[in-house]
Length: 405
Image (cartoon, rainbow, N blue to C red; front, side):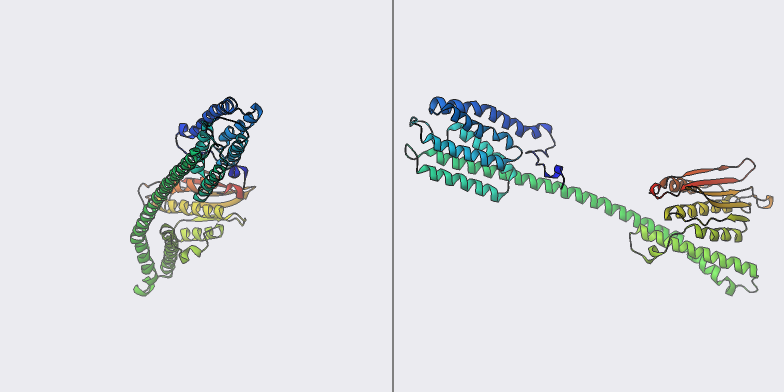
């Protein structure tokens, strides 16, 4: 536990308004400034007490009121002992019967203010013990009253009890309001979380109904083509087998994505994420699709996030080549240079016979996704068309684990 946790907070320190937070200090200062000289004057002039003793009692009875703002129980021990000591000292002083004993008016005012501070801070048990101590002392001092039974003892017992009760009620009311506010905050957070989960579940359903269904159909058609079509050439059969494998892999990744969106623990999440070792499979699948690709491999040991980002960048770049420049010669290289991994995908213009792209235009989401992945791990991305036709994607990914977030 640090010192900030051990340091007590002042009364009303959690109030939202500044003047409310300063109110306890202001009241304590006014009481201290007003009661300190008044006590000295009354004890010396009216009761005839020695000036030095009166000054010491006045300091002990008034100064701890400032401490009561932070530690009211400790202040009570000091003031309670000083008030009892003052009453005992007055037994040895010959004062007029009209004067109050055992507690002069200024002591009653200070003690009532102290009881209010106690009620705002301490527990019910502590407040009850304080009141019982106050009532017990008043009863005990009543047997030594110099001029018979003093009503001031009964008055102080009643006032202290009412003040302690009032302060405790205010404190408990504040605690109830604070807990209600916290509960409302928690409930609002839960509502936002539930709304987010419902939206993610809706997106997952849409992905499943639209994408996963069509991918499943492609997989089944490619797998069964050899049985449904007679005299299928070996090259075509190999092509369909490759299509089925690619579709199954896409379905597996789609299921992992759906599991994340639904916030479920699925078996798909246990599968390892793609890394550098899987880039060769991407290149082979692209080559089987009719795009000549040359690949320069790299056997470097890289962080998981870097390997996944490199795989996704190559995957998106090759997909763009197939969609927008089918048949274009493409070069893919992954190399390590010092503390960075360089991923380069460059394609030339497509052959004249296949100059038309498979897709017109595009959403641009692929390039945005590349930039987001590279930015997350602290790398750089350079993409753009080449002067003689074609396109270039170059990414540099840091291998330092500290840069990977």
